[in-house]
Amino acid sequence: MATTTASTELPELTIDDLQRYSRHLLLPEVGEEGQRRLKAARVLCVGTGGLGSPLALYLAAAGVGTLGLVDFDVVDSSNLQRQIIHSTADIGRKKLDSAEEKLKALNPALNVVKHETRLSSANALDILKDYDVVADGTDNFPTRYLVNDACVLLGKPNAYGSIFRFEGQASVFAAENGPCYRCLYPEPPPPGLVPSCAEGGVLGILPGLVGVIQATEVIKLILGKGEPLVGRLLLVDALNMRFRELRLRRNPECPVCGAHPTVTNLIDYEQFCGIAPAAKEEQAVKNGIPQVSVQELKRRMDAGEDVFVLDVREPFEYQIANIGGKLIPQNDVPQRLAEIDRDREIVVQCKSGGRSQRIAEFLKQAGYPNVSNLAGGILAWSDQIDPKVPKY
Amino acid sequence: MTIFIPTPLRQFAAGKETITVNAATVAAALDELTQAHPDLRRHLFTGEGKVRAFVNVYLNDEDVRYLPEKDATKVSPADTLSIIPSIAGGTFA
Image 1: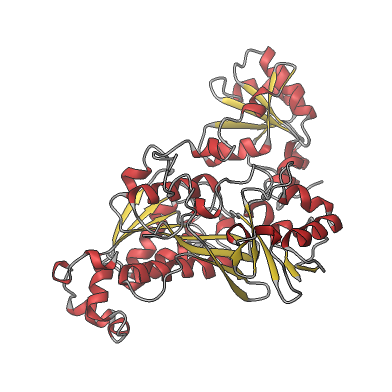
Image 2 (image 1 turned 60 degrees about the vertical axis):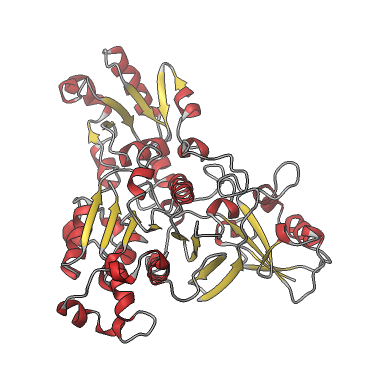
């Protein structure tokens, strides 16, 4: 990609640039022309979390001219163990605003483009098309396949990274003549078989290590120097501090980048990954009350859906552990109906799902149109979503 | 030969990072591994005994799918077999 822009079209370096990037200018592999290429470059970071934090910071420091950021999340205190672009004071702020502030403080000349959205089949091509290189720092299966396919369709290289506990993977996909993620893994694992970091945990430093590898590959792609991680999968084992490398080949039968592709448009990636239509869960109904799994509730909360969680345990239980629901002990519910909004979707929650089922049935009888029960209660939440929530 | 067990699958292999087997081919090595750790079988193979689409097996640094003799490839004690499942750490964005 570095060869596509003639050096005469590249932006000039200012006096400030010459000072700021002097250590780059001394490198023959970068030099003035390379620094101008960086200044002209447009890089899209999908996600400003664990991988996206170091990625965006180093790209901003290196003098990349335009950095697009895709995120819709807000900063949570449990992010700060690894998402170093955000600070304690940013808890509750939009990640995009927090990230922009840090990046502009580091490099005021940087042009930050904020895409406050969840990347989807509907918007991905439109967002990605304006960038030269994509770095996927979201690290979930639907987005990974989405970004991969969009990069292949648009012909944009994708600096990929992924992490789990103490292990990471990195590569460059969808580069000219190189393999794509689907050449490596044609299909995602069924949901539940591979745990996520929220369930399995992750060493906070690991996304730093892997995100910086992604940033390095982005810079090399822009400069057109060195040997990019195209056709190679780098494995990082932080616990034993071992790096290994495996050879990746382009699969001639790849459904998206092969000789006869069957995927020529973006598809429904949540469905492809077996996540979207929570068909089985929706069907689970007990005594007329839909049973919501903790995963489903978490997904809806993360997606910013308006869900009213009603916690019907006793105050002492709430003090030990809660997931932020509104506390009205079960015996008080009949007298406190005014505090429960009829127009909202209500998910009733208790310790393990018994009391909440009875209260949900009561609310339904009292005329609440949209009431469901959190199956397994806060114990299931602790087991499957957040082990930091104490069990009692 | 040495088989590398990736983190997400170690819980099905008694927590071990590596397992040594004495086998003549890739297929025999995987067979010996999953006989010793039956829970791994379900994660590595489909009901028809094919390696799952989200798991790749590498002999040294080469994908077994691209070896001329595939899983019938002969192996020596100095070879390594790596099981590389797809991993994803984060939440949605």
